[in-house]
Amino acid sequence: MLYQLAKFVVSILFFPFYRIKVTGKHHIPKEGPVIICTNHISNLDPPVVGITVSRTVHFMAKEELFEGNFLGGLLRRIHAFPVKRGLADRNALRSGLKILEDGKVLGLFPEGTRSKDGKPGKALPGVGFFALRSQAEVVPCVIISDYKLFRRTKVVYGKPMDVASFRSNKASAKEMSEGIMEEIRNLYEIHKN
Image (cartoon, rainbow, N blue to C red; front, side, top):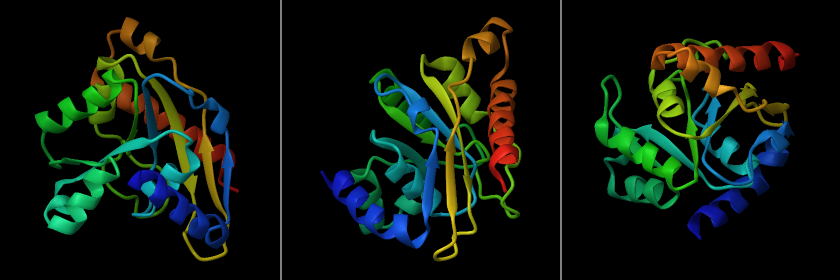
């Protein structure tokens, strides 16, 4: 309920103020487990992904954001869950896999931190772990924006990736993550202008 209300309010503000243009939304499966993998340029990225996907997106967010009672409670009510950065957080890994096992949508930022120049950077192995350990469709996404008011923000969803070929080649989580990031970079190069 709160998620849908927040999505409605954010949509009313963001679509006109950031002139959001969405491409490739049809690539997101309408049911079943999905991992949406997006570059990370701003704290506004999660709400932008949330309002451009018709399904509810569950985001992993840094643990520090959950320390305050109000913000932590709000984030949980809009389906975010905490992760300890810099180490393998087993609780966060279990939470993410459970979301996928339940046939839901998991939103991840493979870089783990915001890009300083707006270009997609290097991926951490976490996203590859989720891709290889679940049966989820992996949809790459790129956000191209400087988040200045009334300037165009592009949100581009690519085709679901062929994770099976990574599995058959016994790819590591790091290799899978790099493959996902490569798809995000390709989308960036095609749509950056």
